[in-house]
Structure formats: structure tokens, C-alpha cells
Amino acid sequence: MTDIFRLEAGGIRLELTPWQVELLSLVPRLAAEGEGVLPESAYGDGSPADEEFKRLTRDEAGQSDRADIVAVEASLDRAGEGVVLAIDEAEAWLRVVGKARLVLGDRLGVTSNAWESDDSMEETPELGLLHYLSWIQSSLVDVLTDQLPDPV
Image 1 (cartoon, rainbow, N blue to C red):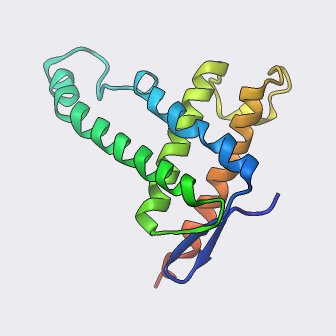
Image 2 (cartoon, rainbow, N blue to C red):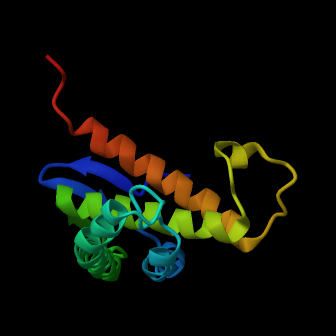
């Protein structure tokens, strides 16, 4: 597979084929489903501190998720011709892809980090998409890491 993200002056270039645009158009919808998958609790015990954490973070997290999804959808519309993403847009991609992976993992019953080498998992389109999104996420992390300054 060729990398779809490349470091370029002014940001990170995203260029997709038509089939990739079509497939990746599923990602924002999957990420939007993630609100029911991710833990909403800091403590998980129903304590007053736990309830306060939920109250303080619920609206902010939802607004941030929606902004990330909008950014990904907007760049997907232009990705067939190639688009240069600002670093914050690339980071939105990372969060949306990550959330979509969590949703897929939840649907598939993934419970450990060893899922990629688990031969007992039935090959399904969702598992194939999970593998593909893992590759995309890894590619994007590599590119984002490459743009960081060298440590002193």
C-alpha cells in the first residue's frame, strides 16, 4: 500500500483514490457512534466526583468530536484531488479514525491488543476495515511524528 499521507511544506498532504474516499466516508459516521462506546467516567463508581467529571466533560467532548468529524468530512470532499491538511486537521483525522476503530473493535468484541494476530477472529468486512484503519492511523502517526522537531 502506498501512503496516503505525506509531509509537505505547509502541512500534510492527503490524496485518496475514489474507492478510498468512498470507504473512508464511513469513518465519520462510525466515529459519531463512539459516544456510546467510550467510557464517560473517570472513576466508574457513581460517586459525586464521578458524576461531576461526567457533567464537566460531556458537552465539551461532544463539541470537540463534532468539530473533528466536520473537519474530516470537509477534507474527504477534497481528498480525491489531493488536499494539504494543517496539523490540527491531521490531528482531527487521527482522533476520528481512532474513535472509529474503537467502535469497530467494540462491535467485533476485541478485548486485547493482540487482536491483529488472533487467528480465531472471523474475517468480516468490519474486521478488514479495522485493519485498514489501523494502517491509516499508523501512517498518519508516522507523518505527524516526522514533522516534530528533533529532541535536544
